Length: 297
Image (cartoon, rainbow, N blue to C red; front, side):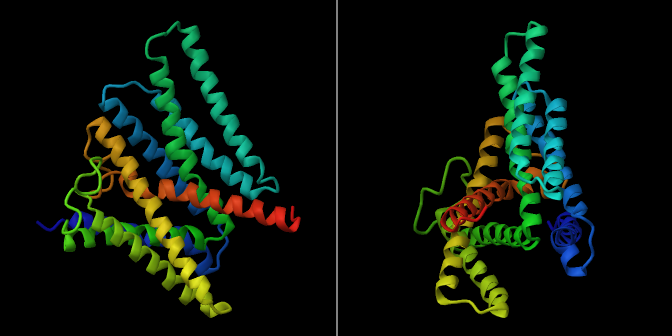
């Protein structure tokens, strides 16, 4: 049966995402990154709610309301640090938020004389904040570094996910009968490998079309782009499997139902949740290396 709700969500969601990622650059308007901030707050707020709901469905306890408030605080701090001249404070601010949140929860339990379930409740609350908020908030850093970064990453994640499905259905398990992993039994090794190849080719195409117009792309740059695309595909698939791991542990099929026919917010952005901090870390260490090599502060 054809699901019109899935098509409707895609028709509305894809153009909206494209505007959020590239609208300011394309239309040459300065909205100070507010569309990206609003979008990030929505994803993190709803995503953290879905994460805590899954945990509660599994019968475990969590400080859901407190966790959501802390989670929404983080992207706004990241945004403000990027808007100020003290962007280096962002890491310290996130650390302070996590430390204060942990101290607050533990102190609350001490004064309430609550012993049983302390490790579980505090740990799961912090996991939700880190997994959803700290990870996904990196999209703001990448956006201010260059609006093209989140857009390219989103396209590559879409290619990775779509190609894995197409190759998996088309080829099936002709070469690897045992499948990919018990965490997600429907995924095949063939689909995973196809995803890696097509994502690498997609970034190659982007580099050729984009860089070639600016100053030309060398053979080495084109090959490197394939390797980078392939690595991003691997990270994206791991991100997908991490969320599947959580859902299996909690005994749920989807993280939510807010995106009609597409599951929840976490179901749609599970790959990006891991790709964003991974790319941010790579760029950060690359910056440190360049700074050390050439004495740049």
